[in-house]
Structure formats: C-alpha cells, structure tokens
Image (cartoon, rainbow, N blue to C red; front, side):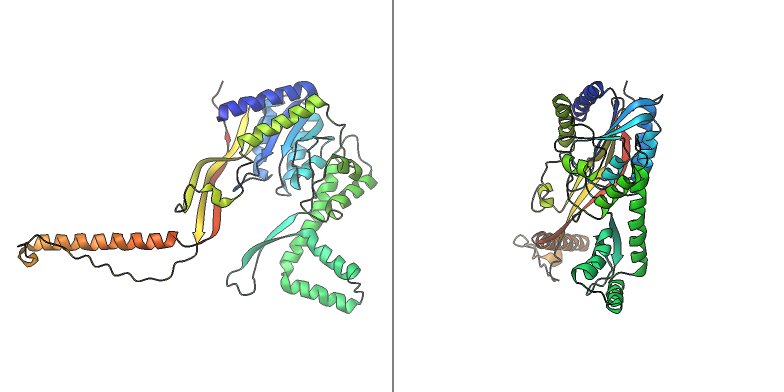
Length: 395
C-alpha cells in the first residue's frame, strides 16, 4: 500500500471517530515492528506540539490521544501529558491494543481511558540498562534488569526464605553489592522512587480528582503487585485496579478504533516475520539496507509526521580459520613463443596481470569460505532517524 493511500485511510477513520466522540483525535503510534521498532521518547514532544498548534488554535473541549506503544523512556510521559492538557478541558486516552509501561503512565494522566476489547495496559516497573563486567568476558557487557527485581530479591530473602538474622541479611545485601556496583544500586533506588512519584503526579492531574487512598492503591498495583513485566492488563482488570476506565465503547466506535489500529498495523507491517534471518534476500547476503524505514507516527487530520531512518541489517558470522593460499597461475604461450624473447615491458605487464588475477582468485576463495561460516548473530541499526512532516508542501 502506498503512503498516500494509507494516510488517506487513517485520516478518514480519524474523522469518523471525531464525529462520534465530538472531539479532536491525535494519534501517537510507536511501531514494534521487527527488526527495529520504536518506543515513547522525548523527541516526540516536538511533533506532538506542532500538531496541537494546528488542531487546537483555541482550547479544545475534548482531546483524544489514540495511543499504541510497548513502552519507552520514563521521563517522556510527564512532558507529554502536561503539554496535551494545556490544549484541552478534557483529556482522554484511546487504547486500541498495546499501551505498556511508559504508555500506561501517559494513560494515568488522562481524565478517561477508553479501552477496546483488545486494549491492554501494563505494569510501570522500569527496566534499567547498564554496562557491567561479566565473569570470563574481557569487556564489560550491556545488561538490563527490572528495577523491581532488586527489591523483590530482598523480599524473597526475608519472607520466602525466612531469613531474619540481621547479620545474615547484611551478608545477603553485601553479596548483592558485590554483583552490582553501588552507583548502579543508587540508580535503581532513584528509579524506584521516581516511577512512583511520576505515577502519583500524573494521577493527581485527573479530573474529577482521584482520592489519595485510591492513588496509592493504583501505584502499588502497577509497580509492586504485577509480578511479570509483560503482564497485559485488560479492561476488566484495569477497572478492578481503580483506573479511570470509561464506559465500553458502543459497537460502531469499537469497530472504528480497531479499524484505525489495523490501518497502522498494515502501514508499519507489524505482522512481518520476527525472524531476523527472514529479512535477507539470499544466504550469501550479509548486509541489507532499507532506505526508508518508518518506526513511528504522530498523525491528525491535518498533518502526518513519521520517524524515518535507514535500517542497516548485518549478519555476524563465525570467523573463518586462518588460511594461507598460494595461487600459482602458469602462463601457456603459443608454440614457438619464448617468454624470455618478449620485450621487457610486455614481460612486466604479463607478470602484473598474473599477480592481480591471483590476488582476485585468492580473495574470492576467502570470501566464499567466509560466507559459508555459520551465522552467530544479526545486528540491526537505524541510521539517521528523524521526524519528517509528510504533509509539508501539500495543499
């Protein structure tokens, strides 16, 4: 499907949702398409703000954010929510499918959450990325782990294992500090406190206001009482937690919400293979580049922004054994032609040609050996990614 036809299909659906909802709709869609997707990040604030300036020259009565994302950076939700609220009296989140982690935080800051039948929120326990030395590895390795995993470890030692002796508990903490450096443990503590603070601040923005005990209960449920980061919270469970879930959308609206999601699912090819090997056109191809790889969009009826870059995929193969190849290319001269009788310049030219041919043959043999080696990894990198206004210059 072309970009123009895809955009026209999404615009028509946005208009229909606006008519039913009596609101303006803004879409923030972060594709989780393999092998390179996107997540909620502060760089989206700028295109979102530009959209708001266009669709809300005066304060809107109702603003709906149609949101899809598997997560992102924890510093982005507060900036996004407080900005959106400056342009409307009532702020609503529409959840067609996945809205995890940072996307759930954005939902906490809305006055109402409209979830489709398939809509899912998630825990808000953040993941910390760090570089740590590993046993038997020369260079420090990047690792990631859930911030709540550390406090869960202490809870396990105290409550499940039944360890109560203070000296033994101190030794357990010392073992933890031996594995994870104090600066990283400090970062974990700051993140642990920060996520709770941000969640409370976002919930305090809701209108009508949410009582303090309910805020505390929601924060605890989303940070401590969900034991798997990938747990999907459906509409019924979200209500039980105490989130500001609106009434179930009537059939016509439900269908429009899902059709709009499918439009973006098709645009970003979300159902393409997740096998990284499936993106290469042949067994001998070790590098492939997609010139226009879109990973996110911010869209309204007036404008469409996409985050676009060049995706470079490269196979990493096991190193071939060290080989020494001696290429001897004997020259066959016609009968009666003696090489020593040829002019010196011609003899030199022939010798250079033989040497170049030998080098090419050797390189081709080594390359063929290399491409026959087993693939041990596939690396992907989005190069030169930036937000692009697809409607710029269009009437």
